[in-house]
Image (cartoon, rainbow, N blue to C red; front, side, top):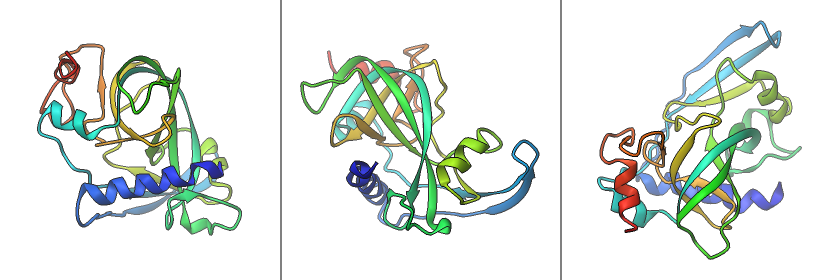
Length: 207
């Protein structure tokens, strides 16, 4: 997991470049979860990204544009101070959960090199509330606080999306904008969550 350090750092830079002053609003609450019989705390964050007014702007700002099917996901703990993968030395209160989705690449419209992989690892900040609690707590390795990102992309297992992403190694990728980087391809006329352009508008950039 140490090889992921530079890519997590890149994710931190993405958020910082998206707005001059990154603002995180935190609202922490405690609850008793019956399934895990543990006291779980949720830390809610809202990250600021740059919005793109046209499909071409998003395509130009992305290193990777692919259609892909989401086949699964896992969790990993990250040090919120450095955005490096958490280690045994990371304080429990500094751990933050990330969700890593497995994406099977179907059509690569844009890629950073000619070595297009069969699968991508899509790193998304935050986890899930009231779901997969044991799996998230296991990944956190002792911390009882699960980060929930208000504006995380809406991604479902088994669905196919048009992804516009950033990557350095061509395998581990991050969203360019959480509202615009994953558009459901069940209908090419589906729009981004900001309602500015469709998946087909992005595909048409490559005609």
